[in-house]
Image (cartoon, rainbow, N blue to C red):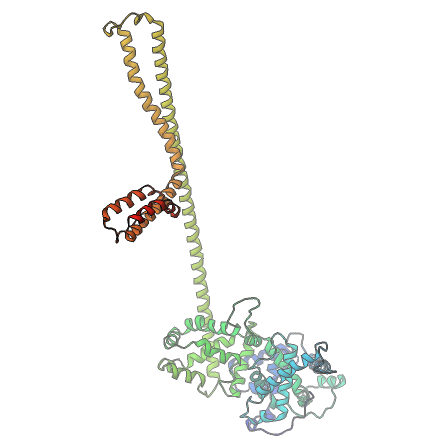
Length: 587
């Protein structure tokens, strides 16, 4: 995986590249501020965020700072940059050496399990084959990417990434990301006359950076280490959030999940952000059957490299990376708003087209004179959408809080009603129970009272036996005996009525508890009765057609089944066999 020497061959796309101005711009924007690295970063951000002309002269440094292969904190110095660069180059050599040692296999590949090495070998061969297919068709319209040196460089970097980033590995589309890095950074790298970089050399450069500007520039752009720089820039770019665009569905943690991260993100941009920012265009897409999120997947997955000329894509990347440095999101949030700006810029044209014409325009975006047009439009749209999103979130939050309050109120009302209903039922039941008990007690008291009266009457008769001795005629009975007998005759019916009332009350109480059981019995009896009727009709239709005396036979059948009418079942039919035999003889 050694880097081949990059020749000074000029390619058509780089014919007008201002090589001489790069060193001048490097001295102006880097060396002049070398004692204050944060100021360098701020200066670069100003050019990148505005899409200003001139950023391309120092793009290699700006991307290294944005992607953190060169640090930019307050403690950073030029020596820090030297040390970081040397360390990355040494680490890359170790990675290559380690990978070579792992992929060496001995023994027969068909001789069974070899500690997993032959399996890894064949897996690696499959990945290499997949990468090679994609590399061979990447930017082939450009002469630079037809060179074997560039193809080998792409194959090497993508294979290294796939082996040291197993969860993500390699996915189609990563080749476009890497190709964009190569296209944008290739012209900055040159041959260096220095074979070995030493600490003494760095000390001399640091002491007089203005004099050794060319040497310092060539150290950071030594073509021998172009592959090393590209690898770490690619790794850091993927870790900045691009790797999420290539994640598969998480079926392990979310069984049944059918949408990956990119699909869900683009749907959110469409359903939320576009709907808020340009509702008219959103509803137009829905009416003609276009899902904007589907279009955005193509744009975002490759960071717009397929929609614009590589030079324009590089300007877009300047803005994307600078915004991520200014407002870290962990997922390159700027691409959401840039996608909205792309739609907004051609919204008038899209609103007048049908489905097929809209697809044609969206898949072949019109060329622009200056990419700063879209970048400035993105800068306008972004705060508006953020504000609208925040307002939407506040409305949803307020709605949920209101709904929660209403639900609590409803729960309280229902709880209070249930409590009142329960108390009311308990009071009614208690009142009814007290009333029943009082009635029963009154009845029994009355019965006791009547018993006492009867007992008093009997006692009175016993104490006065002479009242009816030797009195054989009713007319000779004493008035007192007549009164007692009259009272008894009046008391006995009242006692019976009261006793019956008390008994009926007790029965009613028991009947309330057995109400369900009675309903079930009634239902069962009804089913049996329906079955009896159907059985009777069946037998009548079966035997009545060939009988001379139909009425007599029907009466006999009717009398038979009336006997079992209440609970007529299959077993009951068996009981009638002897009678049916008799009927058969008559037939």
